[in-house]
Length: 154
Image (cartoon, rainbow, N blue to C red; front, side):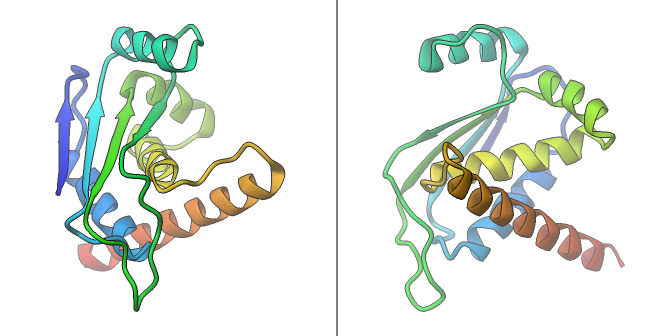
């Protein structure tokens, strides 16, 4: 089950984030019954979490809190249901980054949600090889979702 809770005070099209997460879980062969929570918070709440969990000051764009240490499955052996974890997003930070990247805030939130989900599934970008793998997969997932959204809009 995917639960989205917007506590940020910023209007966000939560249905897009829901469809994105469903699409990403399917592409990564994770059971649709895996539980993931997406929480959108304001800068103050994100700064508090960033300091508490990463010991870094200031708000950040996304934090991930994995629970059952689930990993992507394969088409013939999907990941069993379980508690995937929480993705915390800050739309205010995403908006600033979107301006710099010259795309919409929603596009930035799509990127950050996908990034956070990959962290929940054990991906990281601490080394160049990990970064190549994670960011490559992130691009593939976002492109596949964009294509599916364009097809369904016809």
